[in-house]
Length: 172
Image (cartoon, rainbow, N blue to C red; front, side):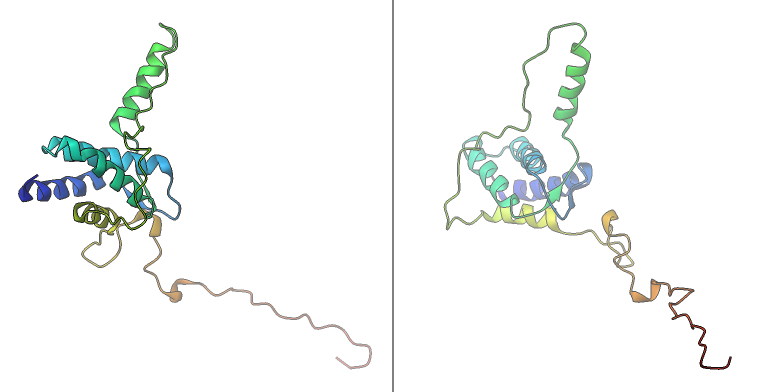
């Protein structure tokens, strides 16, 4: 794959990040990792990526995304299959389940010293970077109040005071 196609792939990954609404979260899950891996792999193959290397590319993407906590929306293929199942329930017998998130390279485990390829590292860096508006505030919707300092916390209008007790020994 020539260098200019790598640049196109990185541009597609940026567009894919917005299209699938890929965000950082506190806890990621396996479905989201698979969705992101499949979406990036589709872009890689559409640009003329080597089909023989796609197996290793998919494996590297999936295993190195395990270190990242990301979430995303459903893929178009998942939505299409869900619609197909709903529409075919009434007319035909139930279809066998098709898993659109199944990876070809699931059985491959990377070696202990194996490092990701530079392309995979760059894709993961793009997926993890936060977008920042012109005024310096993060565009991440999950972190709405993170830019605020401690001055936005209001003080309690009725601070706690110990009640004075009536004493029989002291004149009031």
